[in-house]
Image (cartoon, rainbow, N blue to C red; front, side, top):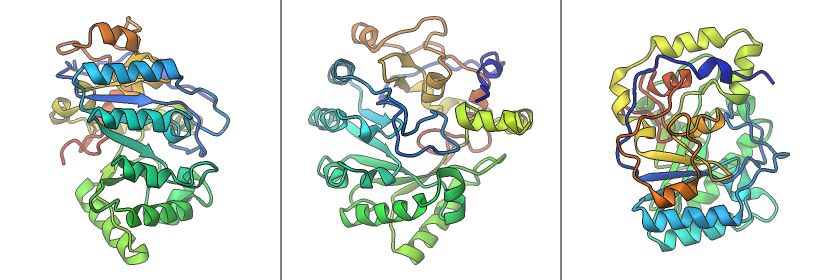
Length: 317
């Protein structure tokens, strides 16, 4: 697989300075039951990297002592880490808001039959990938049969109160060389189509720009479209999005416990403070990162193009 990393590390992207840390995004491992075409983590069923017990205890120690309000769990499929439920329950006992970035189909994996009920009981927020409300687009990105299982999962989550009293957010990714359409208008389309076709409710729609990293980056290089796509991101740069970038208030922890400014930097092995590879154990001693510069690269134009993009959707919404 071709790698865009050497093309992304050197950039003229504007300086970004950190604010107060309020979110810990933790990658529990690259194991996943799917192998999506747009996945910037290159996750899949054959990956074996999983966060161990010692690192999870360090995550909990940081949550209990640093005043961090949100734990954002990602992967892979974070639920496939055997310590996922322990971490969720312990974090909720600390009063921390927990977000599970769920691919929906994991609810039907062997051993996960009661996963939805567990998440509801712990009042975990679910942010679920559904890259389109049309089956053919989902199949193109995520594989055959994924759409039907996703719809089945959403209906089950609705029966448990998700999309009503419990937050259920959906994530849209565009197909091909395109920025996401306006988030509010697309959310209205999702609501209409999912309600009319399947009687499905959800809380919010997040539109997220595809990053030229890992699988999607490799596809761009293989098809000779990398320069065109980077031109699209650069041409649509909006300085208004700089103040609300997620990296100003979040740190990303990889499965080994190393610290990055965001999930994308994690995949590019671009650590915080650029030359300093810090571990979560270092944060336990000194967690104050306010005023530090964020490590940036060409991929950062993906977060600032058009309406902006983050793990919480458009930045200008």
